[in-house]
Image 1 (cartoon, rainbow, N blue to C red):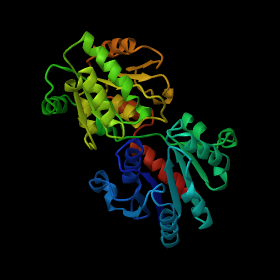
Image 2 (image 1 turned 60 degrees about the horizontal axis):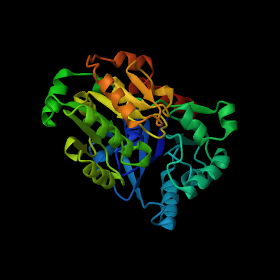
Image 3 (image 1 turned 45 degrees about the vertical axis):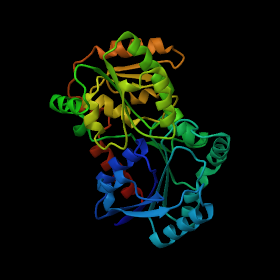
Image 4 (image 1 turned 180 degrees about the vertical axis):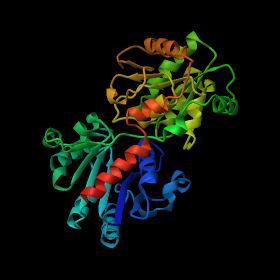
Length: 367
């Protein structure tokens, strides 16, 4: 039986949610499972060069720019599309318009999928999230989350207690991230890295990712070891502020910044250690990728232990000083032995092929 999906959750920036959706949907779509997307303003470039570019894209304005047109467009998409499944991927419940409209249109399967573990916005965003959290059960039929932390943040206690939540792991194509010495040499050469220690981070420039603390840690590392570079992959509203702060500290010349990269799997081969001091997370897909590349990872202890796959994870408190973090990064970077971790990642159920097939089968059997 043919099923039509409408997927919500792609933003203009290539981040964890976008990577998750492209990973899963590229494996799930076939003649019987047809996917369409709600996209804000225009189709992002990273979608155009991905497998999901074959899917139909519905362009809508951002709710904050034109609420009335946003509402009208969603109604039109739902009425004309006759969808079987709505897959609503969000980091907050501040807006549940699509879920409400899908219920009115009698869409059989209405998935709300949590991808984060704390409020990312201001007071109004938090108020709306908490209000919608109390009523979301009226509009959704399925409650997915990337981790238990993300489930507890997004869903009311009765959903959690009755075990209605399904944890959908942020799975990846493990074969793309397994360590490769030739790729490492090629990418390091292209980045102008010779003997330098390369510290890496993947994440948009948003307060959640804690770039200011990354800068403090890196500044402290340079005091101890001069031959070090920092590679930051991502963009965001705080990037210019970060550049100014790096200039003030006199370390900008030691930082490489890249945006919208679809070759993160290769860039991770070039890194020596992965730094990830987030204030909060759902379950960061970049940490799954880094561990598959067999990188030592220094992370904040605010991140769920569900993300831990290898023994190379080192967790520190955000209350610890930048000096302590710097010392830990340098110590972890001493472990330069890298090997293929694909089998371990598969055993931990983070391989996309198996997970996508399981999710597709679950939805086919139930709907």
